[in-house]
Structure formats: structure tokens, C-alpha cells
Amino acid sequence: MPKTPVFDEGRARQIIAEHLDLEGPLLPILHAFNEEFGFVSDSAVPLIADTLKLTRAEVHGVITFYHDFRREPCGRHVLKICRAEACQSLGSEAIARGALAELGVTWHGTTKDGEISVEPVYCLGLCASGPSALLDDLPIGRFDKAKLTEAIGEVSAA
Image (cartoon, rainbow, N blue to C red):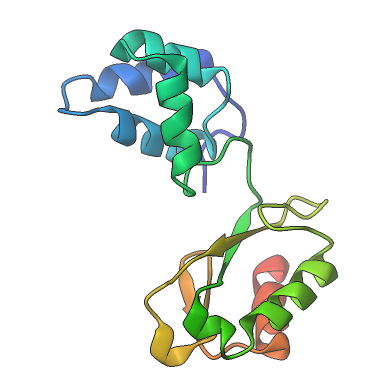
């Protein structure tokens, strides 16, 4: 979970400075922003670009290419549901549609209470126990509606 729920320019500059000695520091900086703030703010893009002597478009392109980088804060808990073919063949799409409707969100959305963000992933490497999902990086194998609802309820109650 992020330490600071909002973007802090001073801390952002510190993070950038801490990574400048690395070869190819862009990805480590972006990961550090995700870790610290929970997302990479649009305000961070020019800071990163200027410091690394990249264009804003290059930084934006990397952020939007990799699905793990968020552009806005996420929920306290993150549910990643596999949408790859193996899980689809076992009914994951119908179960996911039901979960999205129950939570009142769309893909990449966060519940109104800020508890759960739901993201699609395209293979978790858990094909033998599909359909599969991750909830706060804990695998949920062979999920069905009841198992997914139970897991969501457990983290929401915590």
C-alpha cells in the first residue's frame, strides 16, 4: 500500500534523485512512485522527463504501456482477474462481469468507498488452477462467484 495517498512534489524530486545513478532509471522511478504514492501523477511526468532529458511523450508512453503503472490513486485493495484464454475457457468472463456489477465498477475502476480496485490481467501463470485472480497479490485459484465474493468480503472487513 502507498505510504502517501497524494502526490508530493518534494518527495517526488527525492525519489527521482535517489534513482539517477541507475542505468535506465525510468522504470525504477515509476515503480518507486507507484510504491510511494500509489500512482504516477500527471504532475510527475514533466519532473521525470526534464530530469532524465526525455520528452513528456516518452515518459507518458512508458506509463501507459505498462499496466502496473497507475495514473490515479487505487483502492486499498487490488483485485486482478485473469482474462487470458485458459481462464476464459473456464468461465472467468461471466464471473468477472458479475463481480464488476456487484462492486459497481468497470475494469480499472475503484469502488466508491475506495476499498477495491479491479484490474484485468492477461495471464497470472496459474492456468492449471483457473480461473484465477490475485487479491492484494494473494492468488485465488479455481474461483467462482461465491469464492470471489468471500475473498472480497474478507479484505473489506479487515
